[in-house]
Length: 71
Image (spheres, rainbow, N blue to C red):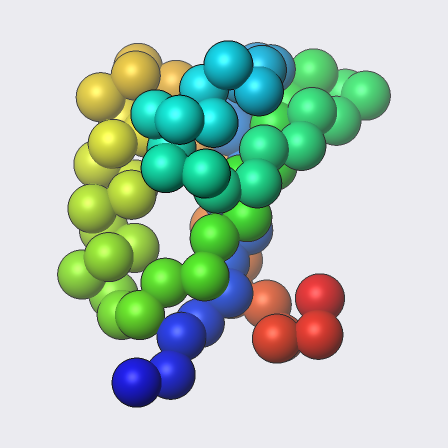
């Protein structure tokens, strides 16, 4: 099964303390006050589940991008 890589940009800084809640996904705090969440996911259902999890935090999702495997 192939996976797809996504970068999800959210409003505010999510610190590394959230790493366990996001099951080890990469969290990168940007200088502009936003956080990038990087994930390799098997399908759209997994992407929707992750977006739902972010929504449950009441955090604004600013962008979702599918990126190449090299990025």
